[in-house]
Length: 164
Image 1: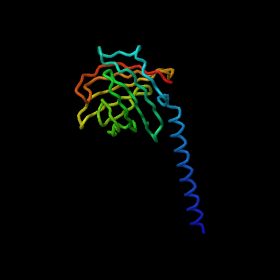
Image 2: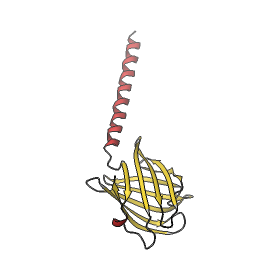
Image 3: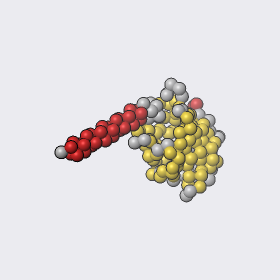
């Protein structure tokens, strides 16, 4: 009988621990200022001549300990891109689903409270490195990109996104 009560208490403690852990993760994610819908502000952004996209909108949602991102873009040449990924901030490669000019995988790390670095790759070779910095008020994100995209074109830009 005492063993059964002990097992029941142990189960209750483990269950409570999981609830607290999951609630903490949910609260931490819900307060992440990166979550939401973001739209490129072309006027505030800097691109090499003729390379600025016509439009980019992306949505970021909480996904466990990481983030799920969906991107819709129209490139300078009119090419439509739609892709997405789910990633943790652990530096491990994640697959990109869709037609991204950045590559077919990426890896994310949190540099500090306001900065995230994403390294994109195509067939295992690094293409573009992005440093994403969110403003202190959480209303804008500036993404500095350098490298060579999956099509072999040089990339050097600072894209400024406004929260919608």
